[in-house]
Figure 1 (cartoon, rainbow, N blue to C red):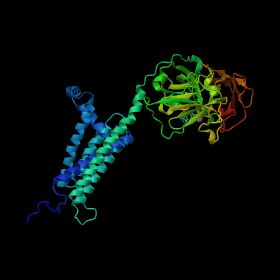
Figure 2: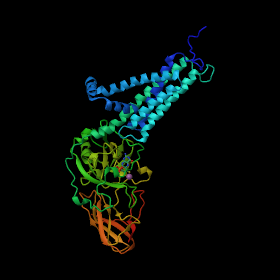
Figure 3: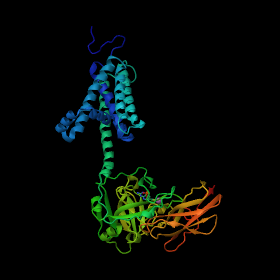
Figure 4: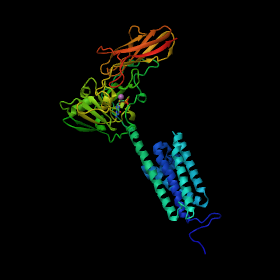
Amino acid sequence: MTTTSTRTDAGAGPRRSGGAGPWVLAGVAATALAVGLAELLAWVTGPVGAPLTAVGGVIVDAVPAPVKDAAIALFGTADKLVLLLVMAAGLVAVGAGIGAAQRANRPMGAVLLGVLGLLGLLAVLTRAGAAAADAVPVVVGTAAGALFLTVAGRRAEAPGDTRGSLDRRGFVRVSAAVAVLGAAAGVAGRWASAAAARVPAAREMLRIPAPAVRETIPAGADLGVPGAEPWLTPADDFYRIDTALAVPRIDVAEWELRIHGMVEREFTLRFEDLTARPLLERAVTLACVSNPVGGDLVGNAVWTGVPLRELLAEAGVQPGADMVLSTSQDGFTAGTPLEALLDPGRDALLAVTMNGEPLPFEHGYPVRMVVSGLYGYVSATKWLVDLKVTRFDRDEGYWTPRGWSARGPIKTASRIEVPRDGDRVAAGEVVLAGTAWAQDTGIAAVQVSVDGGPWREADLGEVPSDDTWRQWVLRTELPGGRHTARVRAVDRDGTVQTAEQAPPAPDGASGWHERTFTVA
Ligand SMILES: Nc1nc2c(c(=O)[nH]1)N[C@H]1C(S)=C(S)[C@@H](COP(=O)(O)O)O[C@H]1N2
Ligand SMILES: [Mo]
């Protein structure tokens, strides 16, 4: 008697899974799982960790130029896709070998898969910009593949009456399912990564026309006092406040702004419609209502955009309207007084650039509002998609039902930046410096009192308009010992900044800022 469908190895029991076919499939499945899972995980950890991209990169770097040229001549822009398909075919062949090896000599297949993973890891970690976290996808993927091969193989070899054992058909089915899942994970991972990269790539490529009207920043705006905040805040250092858990990444090609509500002619704008208009450049200091006295939730940038009053004029505001409710893509809303948006002195903007670059994602790309003189929560909607002309007695912004005032004019403020609290400064001339702001009204004077003495006028930096903050500096001789300096601003209407202390809620902090330091 002979057995035809089972095969006997020296020392091993009969292999219920039959011939090499199922094992080859299991090897392909394990490899597909390893690579596919890694590609999917790289969508989360970042594109550098994607093994197909890394190995493809190594291949492209290694291939001699004539071969590369020939491939491009033959496949054109599909050359990358062809390379991926060649790698996939290669992986199927390698996977088949891994399965056969596991069948012949356990755990040889799993070990070979580990070697494949190691090669992938080497490719990933030698790519430009690779970090330790980029190792995670390949390591996890390889472990999952090896685990599948080991466990499924063991069950396929277990006697039929063992719990969880697989007969030949079961082994083939499980392997086929895992192979399909692995391939699907890989395709999904690569697709998602490409989609995630598309919007930042589009932002990089965006060419926004130069502003028709430029802002002239006076040379004396920044007094250059060491340790003081720069007059122009770099976008990377600009404070960020919003309710977005994940920063919206809007595709500029799909962006639309609807202007509607109490208007004669409702309309919708696309990004090109907006930037085809003459752009206005304005330096404006934004401030957050949550900023405490002396705090840093305030920043100054140069913005370009389209004046909102032009768009509102085209829409034709109906009588009785007194507010514009702006809505962001992520559902935030702000209620801005209509008069501030129509005020020619403020040039309220639909801004598309910040300090000469397309808005950073964190600061509202592709379009946000910038309105001088109003706290951000009632005016500075980022990721703007909708403007509704309405009335304060019909609509309210996000923060109004949460205990913040419906209207939020910025309170005149000033702060000391140099010296810091507790600083020890050298004897001789002491430099006191900082910033003051009263957007839309302007700063006329900054006064400093040391140890309760008389108010002394600080020297002021120049400003392009009343819509930005203004630097100040006071150089003075002080005796050795501890001193406390206080600062207050006077706006261009002649109003002295109030000494009355108020917390940020419900409509902004007030009070004079002071700092205590020691002169050696
Ligand atoms: N979409 C959206 N826009 C928003 C907010 C928000 O939560 N969501 N916060 C506002 C607040 S409270 C402030 S102070 C400013 C801050 O703008 P910045 O993050 O660019 O400094 O954005 C405003 N615009
Ligand atoms: Mo804010």
